Length: 206
Image (cartoon, rainbow, N blue to C red; front, side, top):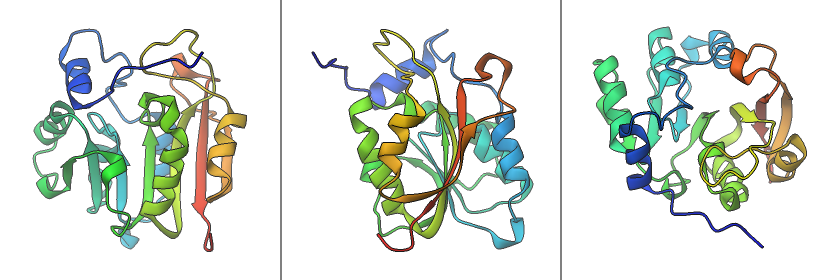
């Protein structure tokens, strides 16, 4: 029998962020695999970057301090967006979007989408739609990069939800070329051996 999950809507996530002890996924910093990836990006190219389901958006903060100026942060809930604005007062306010990722306009294209604990926070039935929407929002040749849990969380009734590389491959293969899809070598200790670092390029022709 298929599991029926509650609506993981803006009110749900606002409660998770504002209730003590319910934001245990929050690393309080950009994680090492993503810092390493960001450090090799070319600032002078100023790519347009989307971080959906960004939470408190430490990744956006790190990119901002590196000099990237076209970083868009999108999240359902107001609390994490306010947290980023408080930590980084000069982060462009117009780049803080309280929005539903699946409602973003595919005509508004990005060069790079960063995945960090958003995919695992979705109702698992939305995973195929996530892959489609990422592809729709990227320019041809644009990239989806980040981390996915390569582990199960048994009997999980709410996020995070796990999975496997075989499952993920089926979602992304129709839209992306796989540049990197391997166990992260520099995860946080609590996540070591349980994360895939992915870098996928949107196909030029679909």
